Image (cartoon, rainbow, N blue to C red; front, side):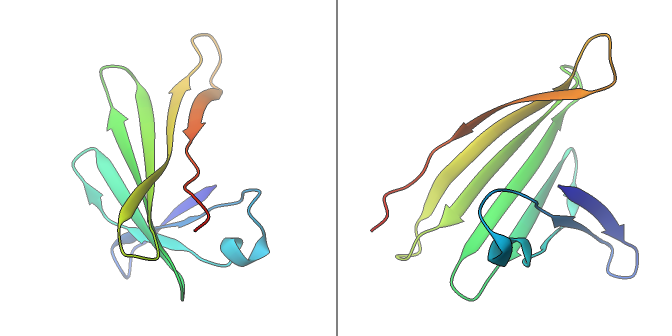
Amino acid sequence: MYVGFNHQENRYVVHWLDIFGGSYSEILGFGRRENNSITFVFKSSDSLLHNTFKWFPNQQKWISYIKQQDQDGKWQSFAIQEIHKKTKRKRYTSKIHIKFGSSQ
């Protein structure tokens, strides 16, 4: 995952690199910061996905909430990921829970 900031548009941009194939990697997400969170919106010709990253400063962690709109326009939870620093190293660890919806 790569995150950047577009100063001209005053918004963040994210490029997900994952296992779901090249066609999904072509779609960029855009979002604006609001307090301790950023919601990235990914739009394609046939789907809409929101990925909200929320920072919890007291716990020094991020939680990523991913939801997508189904064919009927209802929002479905897709995944929740917790990202936090390891205690002695400056690397990040994460736990992820993915919930796949029904195919039809």
